[in-house]
Image (tube, rainbow, N blue to C red; front, side, top):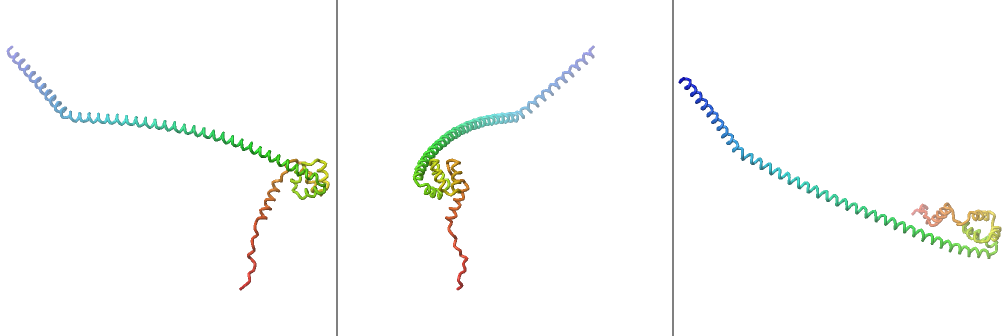
Length: 223
């Protein structure tokens, strides 16, 4: 019995020693971990600080980008409003100019029509007076003068005479001239020259005003 107790005592001692050894090892490991943590603590703190600084820089950059974007967007909107305003002003000016132009054209048309009417009245009165003068002439004399005039001018004068007077004067003219005047009178006023005749007369007038070029190809006497 005494031997068994001794063995149990030895086992308990060994168990205690083993537990104590394990505790010492854990304590040693814990001390090592604390030492490693203390050694890494400064580096970790520095990394955390760098991370916070980068985070703050990123937030500042993001905020600045948002502010710049908002400012740029505001400028674009302001510019768009200015462009719209300018376009509207241009359209209003263009509309006003078109209106003024239309009014001016209408005024010019009225003035031209009025002037043409006045000129027509003056022309008719003048031609009527001229016709009255020819009506007082002898038929043969009136026929001779009208034969020398332009066809349309002669027709303008005859148009204001009475039909009987026209017939008497035409009877005193050459048949060809009388026939041409009769055809012209049938067309009625206004009696105007044809475009081809006007161009032909203008061409003849230009040729008459062209100075003659002296001929320098004459044979010069030999010295």
